[in-house]
Image (cartoon, rainbow, N blue to C red):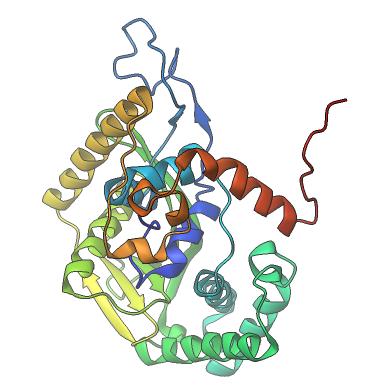
Length: 327
């Protein structure tokens, strides 16, 4: 079983669940587009089918169907993690930086924006419930500052022609499957071509994981083409921890691949929801999975996940659940 994304992308799993709100709205099969063939009589599904997919949810399903069920079907709460929260903080600081006029996008103002971002998220549960010691919290802040500083080794933000940040984009595939996601930054290059930029705050991927990262990125190329009528000239991943830039250029073949894969994944999700067939799949990512204790591959009991995780969330929120007592 696995978290949503590989360990070099710790922030993405939280981001796409929060940003896509991708523990997304779900619906039952009857009378709904999630049916295999809407022209046929409704069939009963064991689980509600998600109304859309995104790069993170597709990655989760293909990596581990059981983790997908817990996170996207049952929408079970997960405890906040320092790497994911740090990624959220740095993304917000860079968002604030890009809101500034180009001439003001300096390292000094970026650090000011980091402090502003920290103040803005201080009360959010993903930060307030981290339970860090003073030393760990200081290291958390220092690491976030390092990532912001390393961003400036990758590019000069004063040269970026920003069109938008944190853009929610949605489109449909040839089979009518809704894909959605959020673009960190959309910009124009010197030739007036569209460029999609995605910030990564985890470690840069190995060769195998790099291909998986780029596969997800091509989804945003398709979304841009469908929504804005223009295909990006390139998509770039900025790995701030190294720092390193990975660039890919979308093609007809890559966009066709996104369309075909998305349709296939949704078909498999529908079948899994109908048959209650969400089998765990072990990999190196199991070490990063918040659901591992409930996974049969680790002697866990999936039926305990919902009551256990909901009770833990209630306790974090200061509203512990009490057992019902009948006279």
